[in-house]
Image (cartoon, rainbow, N blue to C red):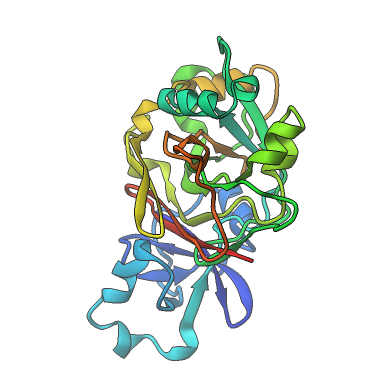
Length: 306
């Protein structure tokens, strides 16, 4: 199942699509956090309202627009705007740093002081998220504050129930689904403060979407193509199979000492190809369009505003 948060007639609603072609409003849920806590749905309610995304919501939803009878069945007032699947996360987003080998190498080239050295254990950090914007929404440039705005396409794991002392064999039971996260970063702030929280947590630095795909849609662990394009140019091209610390290890390790509440989002790290890894480093500028894509989930498309 694919789950969306949408804007319908000025109100945020939760919707689902069983086939990637037709979307229905789920009236029983207040928001996505409510749906996740309830475990999602196995089938679309028979009386659910059918809706159609507006043009321009991204390549991930082109199938929804291509249905043959869409124009005759769906009226203009039922068109919707796709938002981030979880616009208001209940807690900070948990993140993995330097979790692809090639990205570790490029990061060390950019700043050995900040990213070099031995890493016998994974790097964990978090992002403060007041509001997560969705696809086709802007990323603020923070001109004057940020001189090195960067992108990071990542697989996001959404926890489906409170998790503590989770055994490796049980990890799948705690995963609600997966989404695409752009871990936008201000490299000058990230390296200046010797820890990553501020440089990762400016408002607008956590776009997500276009949807959450339920965990049962993928084999575990998911081995999906992951890519990022800037203005159409492929910058990142890898597979989630290349994670250094895999999802099972991430969840078992974290839950040894903390409770991952239902709805927790874990961004699992980014592959090589970020702006700071280019020669010379090439950062985002106003007007750039960033497309983060993960096979089976879709495209998260954002643009940098001045």
